[in-house]
Length: 83
Image 1: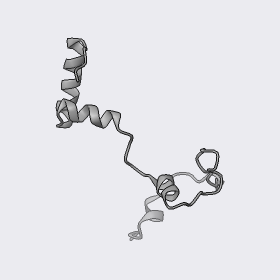
Image 2: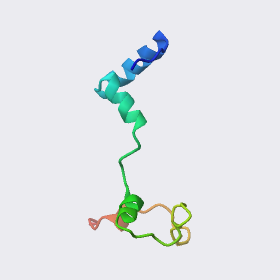
Image 3: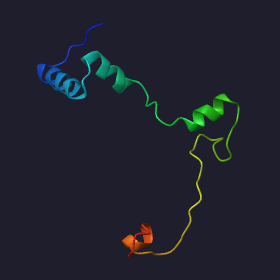
Image 4: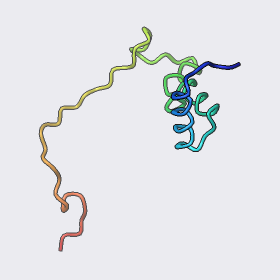
């Protein structure tokens, strides 16, 4: 298969592939393939589990905890090294 693209586009593709240490073909495959990151919902669906709230295809709604306003932490609140 061949694609007719401008020389400018080909140069940009080659530069992007070179930046990532890939061939142009590998870069294009990576761009076309879906992300293989966190697949939690896919794994559950493969196991036959349908989480509550995802039946219509939406992402599940996570709880929101309103803990109030707390300014930035001081070092002594993170590390126990106060002398």
